[in-house]
Amino acid sequence: MRTERKHVAELLILVGLLVAVFVGYNIGGSSTGVAFGPAVGSRAVRKVTAGALFTVFAFLGAWTIGRKVITTMSTEIINAAAFTPAASVGVLFFTGLALLISNLYGVPASTSMTAVGAIVGLGLATGTLNTALMFTILSAWIVAPLIAVFTGVFIGRYLYPHLDAKFAFGRLTNPLIAIDTQGRLPRLSVNDNVAPRDLIGSALVVAIACYMGFSAGASNAANAVAPLVGNGSLDPSPAILLAVGAISVGGFTIARRTLATVGNDVTNMPILAALIVSTVGATIITVLSWLGIPASLAVSTTSCIIGLGWGRASRARTLAEIAKQSPADEPAPQFTTGALKLPPVEGDEGVAASPTVGELAEGEIPGPDRQHASGDHVSSIGEKDPEELSAESLFDPAAAARIVTLWAITPTMAVVGSYGLFSLLA
Image 1 (cartoon, rainbow, N blue to C red):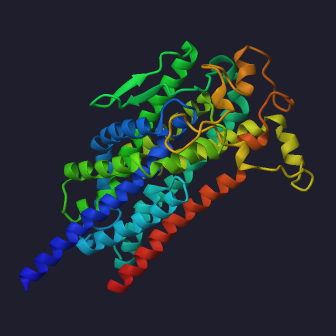
Image 2 (tube, rainbow, N blue to C red; image 1 turned 90 degrees about the horizontal axis):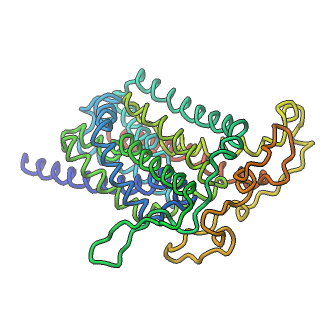
Image 3 (cartoon, one colour; image 1 turned 180 degrees about the horizontal axis):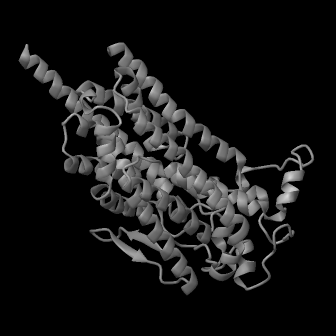
């Protein structure tokens, strides 16, 4: 009898490892898009290069401050004793299922919210939930995206044109960094036909994307392996290696969808905007991870993208005009996805090169950035700027609504599914 139980426990641990890999794979698909979507959208790197850089820096983040988040999720949200081998498999399964659905829709999923949701379902079913800690985590989940949105709105409405006039960077025709696969071993190649200003801007975008990869590893590695650390199946160090390995596979494969969504669908993403978004999102998550709070890089970063796009689009009206004008008085804009998409990055498999922005000369600046880069007058708040991008191309409510809806659905699915399963098994 003991031998049979031992074999069952070993089988459950093996299944748990496989499901952890499945979860890590989907985390890689989501987080790579969030971290490097702006860099790919602004043509600083190709998608393959983004996957490689993300893997390196996600490992660094997970190996250092990511251990604090693993401790929180494996022993503090619920009692570690609740993470039996069977419970660990269930938690990881519902986490991975919710993330897979989100990735299939091309939406950067809230990995931390989904993983914590599955753990909360287990805690509610077993009566082991640390409600005080969950209140702190939920508060952070509310405050973090609000900070990101309002920071983006403020910068987009009041600072962006002035920053653009001084630091305008052109979108590159060819990526700044690419992986050369011609030889026996792949090697990085750098595009040396770039204007100095654009070289600096693109280098900053890549550097901050790597910083975001660090933040993603610090926050998200725990989502794949915390239950296995909680039940003692894995120590933190091998658990981190397992998580990052699975995340890396997702970053090279399924991440193509979320890279396209974050870089192209939500808002027009010139290099300066990518710098702002990446810095705000990564800083919020790094601070929370240092405090041991699992938080979503996807939510914070995409919230900043939405805020920045709305802030830039609202510059044509004063606050008084916005407050006085009712929705009925304002003609409904025709938002079209086609107006928002940047051209495909040259060299991506199965994608034809676009004849629009992709044909600009190296270093040439499309749209309003061309005007500001030349040192011309920057329009003031409420002033109609004929050269400014239309609101439709700066902010797409349909894409934003799709993302926010999936953010709510995925953790809810994880909580309900996990609670239902463990209530039946209790």
